[in-house]
Image 1 (cartoon, rainbow, N blue to C red):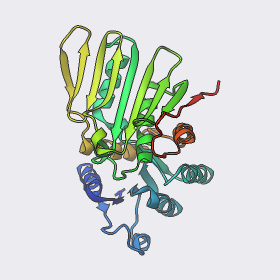
Image 2: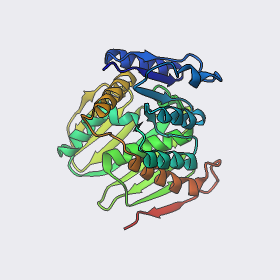
Image 3: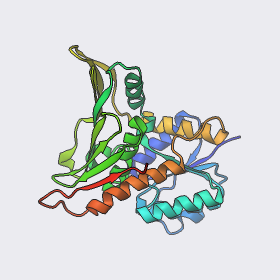
Image 4: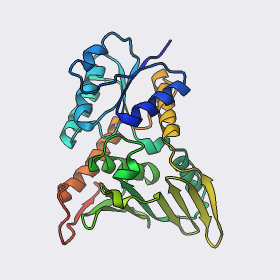
Length: 300
């Protein structure tokens, strides 16, 4: 069966998705004007098997609902809507009606993240004791079209739970930049830095420190260092084209019934939970002179 994908994305993201589909032999239709009043009606003529919806969050939910109502599978990056309430409402509708929604998170498809998880699981750095994740507007630009701080919270928290599981507690600070401090039942601790300031971008996305070594996953290269040894390069960094191709290939496997989805609606709900914890504390207002703090302990 020939699969035709609609690609609804902005700027370079539309080009990257299209190139990824081409590499997988998947034909596409790519609307040129996402703000055209007849955008959705223009797609009625196509027999679509799936749609990639990577538009700004303000447009995302109604477009996702359009495709799901016509029983077209939807591939959409998190966040799924413009705010927490809208995202939760969409998830409830999807679960109630049994619609085919495949939420995606870019770093789950990143080759270097997968390699880093393998190195960590193999015990090469001993027991993980500390990690840090750093995302900013400028660093995220090549992967996700949206520039909102809300997007970065979704992405960083999903990366945390993907690599380390859910924390026992999450403490949030708002000065000088938003920082989540995660604590686990073990000795593991972590910091997540998120910012919409270009000046805050860092070359390293993920650092994992262990009792016997360290892993750095960077935007342009990734490195492993055993305690007392020299640093070895194990990857080329975060590659947008590779990520999009891996995401779409995985989604094709899910649609064929050959694989379970990487992200489920229940996992989306958990990310919403942690974002809600942060927003209750910060409300995304300008940082105060004295850091606000809010501690949430996971339910027993």
